[in-house]
Length: 232
Image (cartoon, rainbow, N blue to C red; front, side):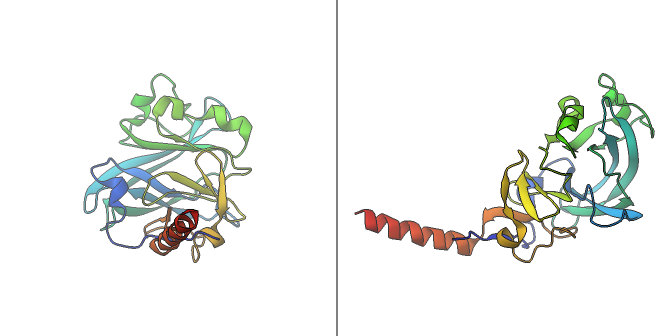
């Protein structure tokens, strides 16, 4: 039997992750389908109604130490779900580490400083690394900055986003398969999250969750009850 998961659309659902938290990277398309666009969306999760300002740095981790490949200043107000979607210049699609921070001295082309990165980026709110090959995993900046190191899933993901309930990172490949942060294949989006389009993501809307939807939980509960009766 397929267990169906849900896209949580209720207002405030994201507060499970965001309440009282610093701004977090919430949804990114590291490698969008088709030719590279001029701009793309980048979603941040925070406290509903709060204003914020941050700087996004993309570090090219095809080598080590990597270099600063993109810098974007982002500011705005989180919506009722604690979400803010920024339109930024298209991100490069090599292996990359994304750093969301208060801002520092780093300029385009600067080499990541393993000792002085605090001066380069300021206070680091969140960071995540996405490799496009196994050999690039050791080039991640996460061991220095803190954050999340995502496992290689056979290609660079087209989409990464946090589960709206657990806050755990999920990755999606070109086939629509969903992987967890450790690289385990959880199944195809068409089966797990009907109606979700991994090629467009859910920017501006609450992310899907892989916590079973209530209907699926009810079915599972009934199944467990029946199984319990049979064991008597």
